Image (cartoon, rainbow over all chains, first blue to last red; front, side):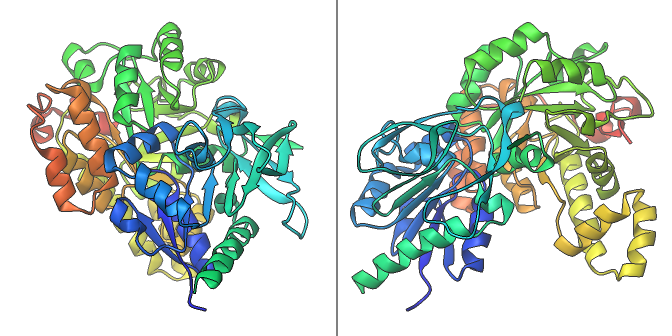
Length: 191
Length: 294
């Protein structure tokens, strides 16, 4: 099949690092700043950044409804850090969970650690947590893939993957590869 | 096993600020306005650069009470300025758990020879630079983010352009050199050879590069982003303008859509008067803040 086209919400944050990772894995990344940018996407990444800035940007651009429609069409979504927050009940409402912002504390509490993630073979992932959120509560349909301090930091709900950390900064390709599996399976089923 | 305060973690926060606007604030109320306008972080300081220029005297770190008030007022990252070489101010800011310390030429330098040893801290540092060598010296000292200096408090973009073009131009020239030439380039730039090699290979700094000093309009932000800045600091440009809220929002919008002139045009419309500006070429040498630091 053709290389999947994966959008990256590029209102603010580390969208360029996600684009590099996706390109290396054989996808065609596209920076998305307006509703028109969502047309024809096979998947969408919501990157790390400042969740307040991103929320205001989504509002300014009128992106909330188009993003919900994209999700309703079954397009796989991948949120990292601020992206996880955007997907939660209090923001776009696209995952059945509530994120706790800056859950580990301010920047001096930011850390990296080796993390085993369910469904990601090949040993632990080097996970970078930056003023990171965790999942404070979630519905039964949400599968927890990894925890830190007993709090979920990687979750999957259908074709929607969300994580608290930044594999795009550590050159760790396995989470993006896992997401692209969802994207390819969905695109294959549609075509 | 958790590793806190690694360089990856320090530089990583700057990665999250990319494409955003960091705004100078002197009160919690200003911090709230900045956050509501879409700032990706705020910079707490005692006085904005335009007031430091006007009033003179020694410019120092903010009162901790003010910094705490700002931290309580907003949930976005809070940065704060320490004087060049004043590691005790930086220790205080680390104890307050600010998210980034700006070792800044905007404040009055405390040491005329040495910058702060930034490796000794858990809190990450951002430092100013006017050229590639200065940027790499700061990174060698442990800075996890660089901003071009420009000329703070003027509303004149010319120095920001000069410094950004200098840094990016010098990076491009390094990329044309072979291995043996890089050693003499390192000497010329007075910068660590390993960092010079890395920049030559990657074609970019090893940390995030923002611009600062003189940004007053949405078009200024677009200009700097097109010249290679990965985000923008705005100091006096917002709260010294006629309509801070509108202007702050407009600069945020223009930073996101910097490559789309129609969006920058829309953002630039009806903002009222910009800050009272100073032409930086008319300033006396001793009034130039960018010359502080080495």
